[in-house]
Length: 206
Length: 315
Image (cartoon, rainbow over all chains, first blue to last red; front, side, top):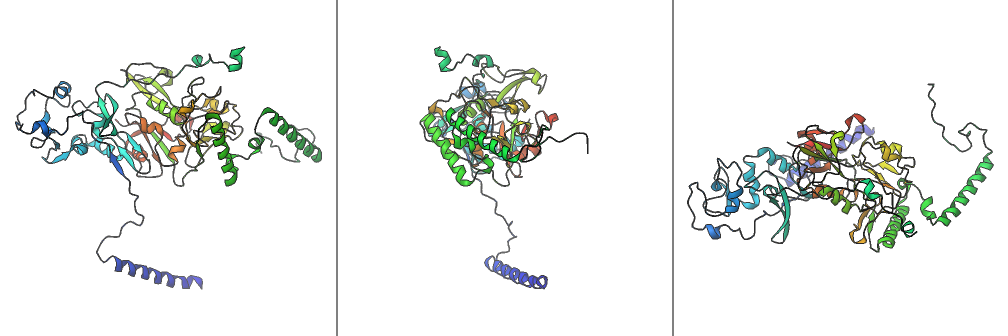
């Protein structure tokens, strides 16, 4: 008896729910997945500019020569440049018209805060891993808001093979900048025999 | 019946396990009461807290009893360090099983993780110096081989040519030999996979240390030396609360952080991003992506400890 009567109630309820849903959502939208995916916040640290280097247009306002050449300035970049140096130079990544942004292969520009899009053009596998959190360092919550570092926080874009990093402050925010020197390790652990010299205070006094 | 006999279990009113004649139940009860009384007075004489000695196992504590135990730990911290601390016993979350990934193609052996761990987890700084993470320098020629590894490497800069680095810490085994070895059930595996220790329950016998194939457990051979200024006041009862002398401790995946959704301290500090952490039951998590797209292995797989700590090569 019960088994027979329940379906009617279920059908009635389902009809009511469907009617209400249709009334509230008249637009022909595909049904959304039932559970709403938790919104995860991602924040990237600011790019690690050297002091006083940005904005670039302060110096580059009238420099519009697009020919590849040795520059008479930016020695610190030219001296270390090792990023497919045979084939590339500044204006492959920096925009000629507006030096305050970067330039993709398509000609579109991206701000320095989104430089990963530029790097991702060639380094697609690393870019995918970085987006998924497998490549690079993250700080924050394993199940929630977290902070990323940009590619350039650890890899000097002009000499990208990883060497080392140091902590710096940009506009009052702590971030990381690549170095050209390798990392110095923390002190080695004490050997067991080095820990044996210790005596209890009472014994030491005897 | 097989010829192998099960171990005798001491039961009230049952036969003596050594095969002697059954004891008169009333005599047995008398002896028990007398022994308990003697033990209590002896304990009081030794300065041991009787209430603490007689309390139930951590897993059997009621909410009220647990609150009392936590308050007592906070009081002891105050006496020992003169600082206010917050000791919690946050339990495992349903639907969470922690997994840890370590990218040995990235690790450069800088030991930042070792010292971040010491700071976060209130280890003894020296004499005894306790490190939960041990970074081994290995030779590329030999691969992962403990016979060709060096814990005490000293270098001006790392990585050194021809070497790679292999950090080892508690592997949070699914089949943990240490838990089986513990005679007092002072260590056990939690629902989210963390193998924990109740330092108030540990008798310091070190059976777990000899059972652990990873050398991940460490004994406080002397009173831990932890400067009050460096005490981390955010503590978990089963994790980083300051330990007494004579107990064993180990990595807990930073239980005080990870149970609240944060990354472990070693993951956050790693300058090369070699350390990955997340929920193995969440298909979108970083650790699942590692397991699905990288070459992953576990250390000493042949021992069937089934670690929740995975090593991988991203490149």
